[in-house]
Image: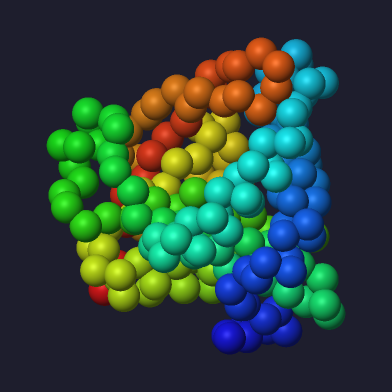
Amino acid sequence: MRISGQAIIAEIAPADRQAMIDLHRHIRTVTDTPIYPEYAQANIDFRLYEKNWATYFDNKAAGKKDLALKATLDNRIIGFARFSTANPDDPKLLAIVKDGWAELHWLYILPEYQGQRIGKQLYQLAKKHAADWGCRQMVIEAYRDNPTTRKFYESFGLKIASEVLSHNIRSERAFDIPSVRFVEFNLG
């Protein structure tokens, strides 16, 4: 466990599953609503969050290199990060990323707790764990039109490595969202 201010950072446990689903829904609604097309905002299929967390716990049980960390303050989960080893599917990314890399899937902090270095602590721990797994690089995808997220990663000196359309199936009708990919080249 690490302490950032008063927030405690720890691995997400199976007992946290429903709290994580609820927090993920809330954070997605708060942070992504302005980015999602109108038809998607009204029809978000929140069952996908249940599936995402079920996949995480299945991966953990199977011994895969997949880790989720939570930030807790006063017994309330206020943020989380999930990362794993992965394989690039973007030809532009393949030209940049070499063997031995991880992907940061999510890093969210409730808006009222942002700016308190909790996100930075989660990011640094994700990098450390990925390096311990033997990864040398980490890929992060962020919505292009989310300036807060882009500014966060740019504050670490990261530059946009490629632009992609993220295929999003969080509603009855799939949609693409313009996104950017950052690459952290130095996990050590």
